[in-house]
Image (cartoon, rainbow, N blue to C red; front, top):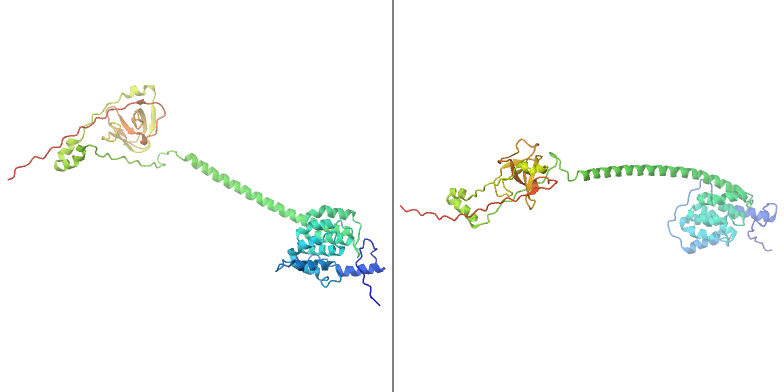
Length: 387
């Protein structure tokens, strides 16, 4: 006498009743295949090794074959593999597969909780087998993908099917919607908190940037300004004139022999009187400021003795300039330091343009004639008679 083995039967075509032989088959099938995790089930940890394709394929084949040696443990082993088994489980959710394979693949995908399986699980909600739809609903609730909300609402409102053990698919969808709603409230709260923190950080960054830019602009505005008593101007070193003639080169040797000869070699420069101040300033007065303590000379050259001294901040009245704009003929204005003075008959003198602020306006051009000093012939020492 042979024992007849019953193949799994689709519950959509057979009444789910335990009083019939078919009902007894579905009851046994439900006990063998129903391993749905509770709400407190922990997520599977990533595998410690990379499974081979042959191992994963063998476990997928065992899902829908109750006679396979790995049928009872296939779901647990796939869950233990973790995210590495998700691509194979997504392929196993193909509607062309046996319904038992899809049912158990959905269960394993839900326990792993990888969002990559959400798309195939949403497609499984249209499967004609109510067991498959029920398993897909539970898996989507575990994954928590909000993309499934619309399809779950449709199933909760329109699906009239029941599983082979009598649970309504619509009721499972309603429970899944409630679970996703609770998660979405917490998720929205977290997103609002993140958004608020981001806005506060952006405001602080803008305030800091505005402060830095304001300081930078203030420094640029101060750049180049001359503030008396606060701004340190560069010190100008007047060049030392080197002797240019043979007589001047011999002067130190002669001075060593005869000290009076050095005094005799100094040129006597007659000052050239400038036009009167009233005549020059009749058309308008141009004034400026002394930028550095400096000497005032009788001629526009450094080869003569100073006739006065001015200090930083003194007011000057510009009377004329040289044609090369290197020297200005000036006199002291009203605002001056106590030690400032120009000791000339008319109170005027020449000052280098690097030591004063440039006047704004037109000045008369004046180039005084600087007399040339004729070299003095060398005087041979007179021999003295020997005693």
